[in-house]
Image (cartoon, rainbow over all chains, first blue to last red; front, side, top):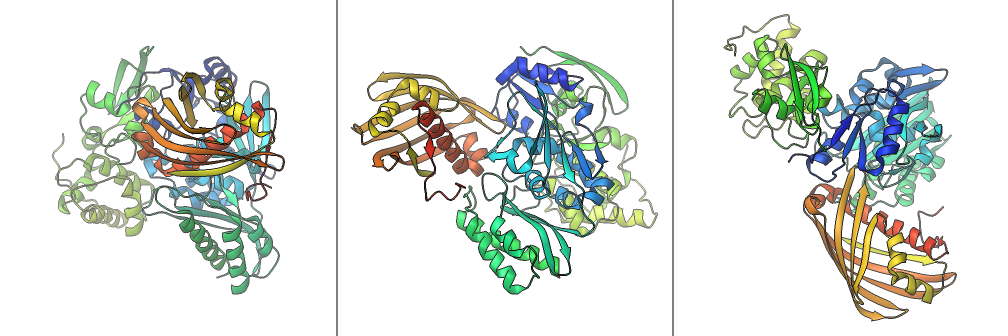
Length: 284
Length: 169
Length: 158
């Protein structure tokens, strides 16, 4: 199906984009990679009167290391993350997760910022940004503000972004030398929306994990950390018993929501499956 | 409301100027305005891969890309890539391994395969299968397509080139 | 799709009942409500713009009230058309009970969503419906001047 008619503008600077957004209001939608938006427009599930193309904004581009922070611009594509040497070195979780996103042609256009701004519960980047303790940089009419990933994802498709704001970039603390990670996504076919997924990050010494984060996605309205399970594991040598306790804790503390193909009980079960595989993988 | 926009792009090596509605997808512009029928329309959702074309050296879904977004870009379709010989060994392998029947998926499949061969030349069979899972084929059952791509990867790894028998468009 | 829930609203039952039947309060409580009018004591028409993620679907809907027991309970049948996006219909039952701190509003809903929104959005229908219901009650409570009090049994409350 074809989209309904709309006007199109491509601002050259962030200030211009913000001004356009303020003026157009609810009738305009931002387009970056467009891999979610254009599919939506093609089905006429939305009929904005205008698209504001933000792909020209230099402030939103690039991957760099500033001090002990890895900065990823909102316009960085999934493929750029997949291929980046800086990401491989400083946030290898992202390199592991990237190939799970749809397929290559989508990854060549879809963006880091777009995925974060929509906050789809099945998306990889919201979960990874939470797992890596990211800070979001947001531009608005009153200037820039910062907010941690913990506070950024509020509800289903609801982030802290106001309608007149644009996500500029994120900052992630660069990986320590003993950081380990595990990323896994269960789906019927490669590239499908995940049924359940896990992004696990920790510092590891011997069989002891510390500062560990177990972030599950596609089980609730937002990515969610299994904090009680994390606390159980933190600082103690991993063995079968501890893993079993952590698995039970994670299953108990997270209240899953069913979706069209899987019941809440299935999701509950899979949370445990993923955590068990992850922890066992890390001490193998 | 839909004021037409003036755009300029390079398509298969030639400069193209046009005035089009913003909502027009790149694949529709290529097919209907430029009569390049190589890329096809399937789902218009980005899932089937039939509309895959190359923009600035990368494969993209022509149905999830507006023609206005291609302003200033270099666009290549199966027609141009055949003429330049860029797909010659893949096309030869596809023919040898019977990787086409109705041909509807083939344009997208070849473009996707070409990016794999270029960017990830050490792919295993499993990785090839995952890579092309973004292109649907209703006829072949996929095995012959994977065989063809593996054959090209192996030949290139040995520094061999398959002699193209494909007639130029 | 089923949606059942409970909300504790820090306001007395008569106020809550009045609010649920007040068109102006509903206009401010329903997220995305653009128009609302009472056609008869039992029938309400409304236009609501649903915004979830990239989707912006404008629904024209009708609500039919029945089995009305003032200050206690009522049943509702609703149907809505989202134009090219799809359609929705269902029924709901709302009950008010006195509770410590105010009024306990419990609702049970059965709904079906058809058309493209159902096909594409089916993945997240339950979660979306729950979010819309939660948003409604947040705004409704604010309109009444009270607050939503987290229930003891609510596991998401921290």
